[in-house]
Every structure is written in C-alpha cells, then in structure tokens.
Image (cartoon, rainbow, N blue to C red; front, side):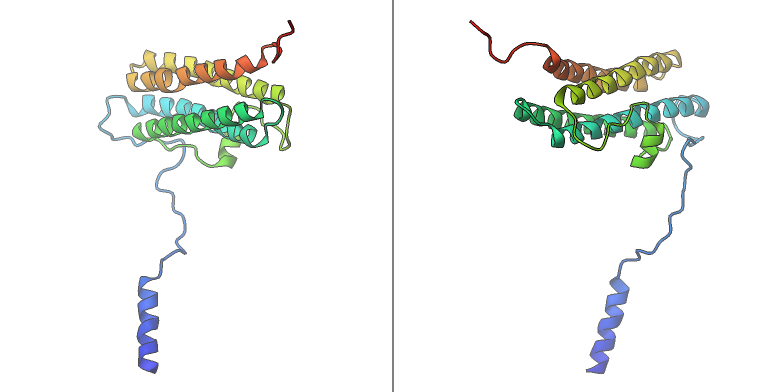
Length: 198
C-alpha cells in the first residue's frame, strides 16, 4: 500500500503545472525589433508603433466605456441603448485587436493592461457611478472625437513615410467605424419628442 502511494505522489508532481515562474520581459515596451523583414526602417516603425499605441490606449478606453454604459444605462430608451452600447463594445473590441496586431507586426509591444492604458489615454475617465443617458452619450461622442482626430493625424503621418499598411488600417478599420458609431449614438441627442402632438 505504501509503494502505491509513493508512485501516485511521483505521478502527481510529474504532471503538476510549473506555475511559480517569474516574469521576464523579453522585449521592453517602447522598443521595436530592429532586424525584421519589413521595408520600413526600425526608426520609422518605432514612430508608427508609438502612435498606434496611443490610438490603442484610447480605443481600449472607449471600448470599456461602452461596456460601462451598457451596464449602467437607464430610462425610456434603456432597451435600445443597452443593445446598441453592447454592439459598439463588440465592434470596438475588434478594432482594439486589429490595432494591437499592427503594433506587433511592426515589431513593437502593445499597451495592454488597464493601469497602463489609464496613464496613456487622452480620453477623460468617467466617474465610477451611473450618469444620465445624455451625459453617457456626450462622453462617448467626446471619446470618438479624440479617436477620429487621432486617426486623421496618424493616417497623414503613415502616408508621409509610405506606411500604407498602417494608413489603410487607420482609415478603413478605425476611422470609418468610429465615424459611424458617432453618428448612431449622436442621433439619440436630437431634441425630438417620442410622440408627436397632433
């Protein structure tokens, strides 16, 4: 009986996960891989990565603000906005992933954790509590305006250095969806009664 117990103990330790590893950075944030099969120089890629990480931080912040408002929305348009905010959250999650992959493709390191995003983003943080719908939408529109302006600057900078991949991504995958989302939510602030008086 003792021998069987010993074998079991050895089998357990042999297949146990090694979960006490300590983190070792293999690439510092803010750097790019110098020797890559990419036509842009490391210096140009580093500039694009820095700009993309700014756009990424702002997009992560907007994505999370959509989820916050999805959970906290209230009032007569609750159902419509609850669904719309969640739809926009999902679209922003796709945008975030697309930007992050471009950063990595250029040899950089993506901004990723909430605390780091909070330090880098240009979008003001909302309060922890619930706000009225017009304020929620106004915050989202302000965030979209920051991202749209950032897209225009980044698109021009990418075009100036012939980084057509970044230019295409920023215009097609970030700018246009943000413009569309701004239009959709902005229409909820038009002063129009729900029922017309006859």
